[in-house]
Image: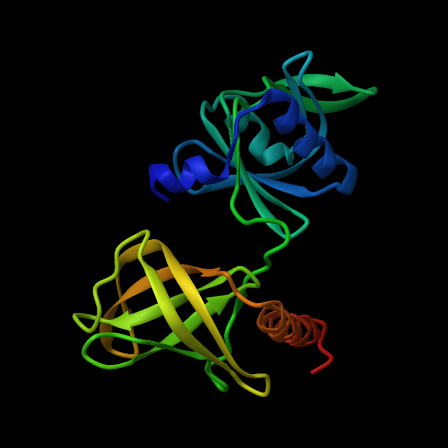
Length: 241
């Protein structure tokens, strides 16, 4: 993630950082704490966050991780809250008693990243029933496969040298074909351009786009499609299908 993307998702107000972490504590959301500068990690959870005391309390970790975690600096923490990925770093932790139970204390993170807006849940589009997007271009329309999408935008794959896109470019009159839900026409703005990636043996560009001025009827159709994919995914994970 580049610096501009981090700025977009960064929360730097201590009170707001604490509020998000307290909400995670209320849900007993798991936190993965990566330590030691390598691939080692321990599972924990937020117990309390207090901006006035500059304090974050984490649940005790398994004893096999405790010594190494206490000796580590720059501990990378990741978790989710309401479907949104949360990332933050604590400089160090130390043992403490919290409400009479062993726990870990650190200074409150100076910032955290929320990597997806709460109202926009992203789903991967199924390979069996692909979603495609037709982009008007001077040399003729370009049909690009959609990798994933949400109610706010989508990610495309565009074959190398077919179309060069830059961040901020607005693509007018794009047509998005949703299996069983019809065609949606919308403008889109390029918000992210990724390094070349390989797909089905071909090299192409990954590109994230946000919908622009989408009509209410079109937006509802996209929302219904995204919700249907999410329901199908949850059913499969539950062993119902």
